[in-house]
Each structure stands twice: as structure tokens, then as C-alpha cells.
Image (cartoon, rainbow, N blue to C red; front, side, top):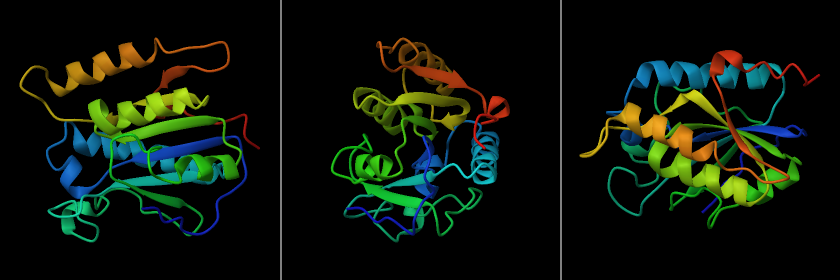
Length: 189
């Protein structure tokens, strides 16, 4: 289910971009703003040579079938480069039935910066999965999105997710928030 494209730089941090695909973000809350913030994080990660992992969800049929128009990365999102990893998944948690953990272990990542879609599904599940595997997680607070549902607005879902995930902590790792404008990775040479 996986494909790793090219090699990726060695480092302790990694940027993980989840499911920013045409069908997933077609009606997403503040899509343009959120994708611009994701692109800001991608540009800075490239500048600092922080490894980038793109994750794409797929189904055997329909608009999310591999290769279909809806499966493609959104046209406004910065596309993967040769050195970026690409992981394909079929369940919300990008660690399940994929090589994501192996890819992150290969680059010795211990701190993941996560952005993408949808907040209440794959972003949430993958953040929790990363925490469970012992990674420190920074959810890029203004660079993930979702859609309204029958009970909550997208903003309420985002706020609830921020509240819930930032209460995850242990003696060795935690989940925190940082906006795309506050990312500087100044500790990276």
C-alpha cells in the first residue's frame, strides 16, 4: 500500500501532510487559507531541510481510487519533491498498514509536525497514533481543516480537537499546538 519516493534527509523532526487531496478538501472550511498555511510550513521545512512526508488516502473504487481526479493532491498544495516520502493508506490512522513508522524510523524522527485534512478523522487518528508510538507531536494549528457536520461547525471541530489532543502527554512525549507563522525550526542548522 506504500510508495516511498526518493530519499529523505536525516533529522529529528519531520513534517507530515495528511490527505490534502481534491475530494477530501473540496468543501473544506477555509480551504485556501489552510492550504496556504500548509504551503508556508512546506517552504520552511524545505529551507531547513526537514524531511517531508505526504500521506494520501485511497479506496478501491470511486473518487478516492488511486489515480482518480479526487485522489490527486490538491492543485494549490506544494507538490512532493524527489526527496519527499509519499505514503498511501486505506484507514484514518496513517500508521496502520503502511510504512510510515519505518519511514520515520529511517530518518530518526522523534518530533512530528502534522497538518492536513480532515481534522476529526485522519489528522486526529494519525496524531494519536504518533503519540502512542512515542513521538512528540506538534499539530500546526492553522494548517488543518475539515467540514461542518450535522452536530458541529468545522471551527468547533477544530477547537475541540485542539483541546482534546493537547491534553495528551506522558513523561516522554506530548502533543502541542503551533501556528504556521510561529514555525521557525531555528534549532535546525
